[in-house]
Length: 261
Image (cartoon, rainbow, N blue to C red; front, side, top):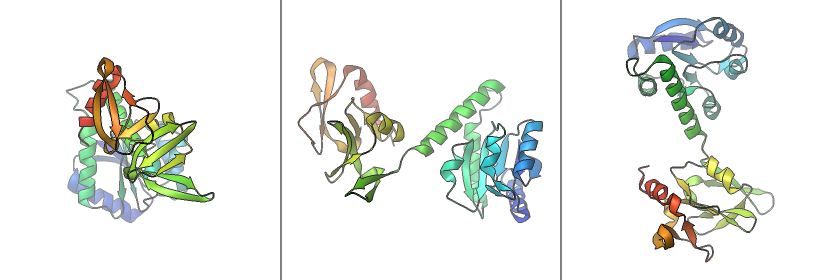
């Protein structure tokens, strides 16, 4: 496995080399780069490595500038002293985000993740392996991108922070999108249901129809309905409208409800 290090602190480079020797001695270090400009030139003139270890704050700016000027298709492990860039890191090919000082346990976990993502050569061709790796990286990035909180406008100039775990369901009432909390309180939110469906984790919420996006905790019980459909009864009934799961979505709904989280 061939690796590239992008890091401008000599002490951090020494620590990283020591960790790699301990955790993954099979890794061959191609070179160490310490700037954005040097990194862009390297990627434009060399074959892609198997893995890149990249600090975020470099001598001439943010490492994210590198991605604006060159294509990097291999997985990246970010190594940084700052935790505020984690979400931005997963918008590129990042598979892990290690905070300095990095220990052997964190490095071992990063390589376990890398090994899961990389198929064995004898199992698939190089092109298929690359496509599968990129698909899995994209899946990780999407998972990291799901909303964990909402800021809900209340009383004019205030915003109420709400954790996703406190929300039972999202729904449409009239022309407004709303959410219902576990305690039965509802709030209007500036999103439509399509946007909400895309932004929340589908393992936690299911779009049963055009009006409702439900969590498991919102469901009191389920009734068999006409034509092999289901009628979902909620813990907090906002109105008397029947929440019907169509025949074509029943199997998918049952599979989602029984899925391990």
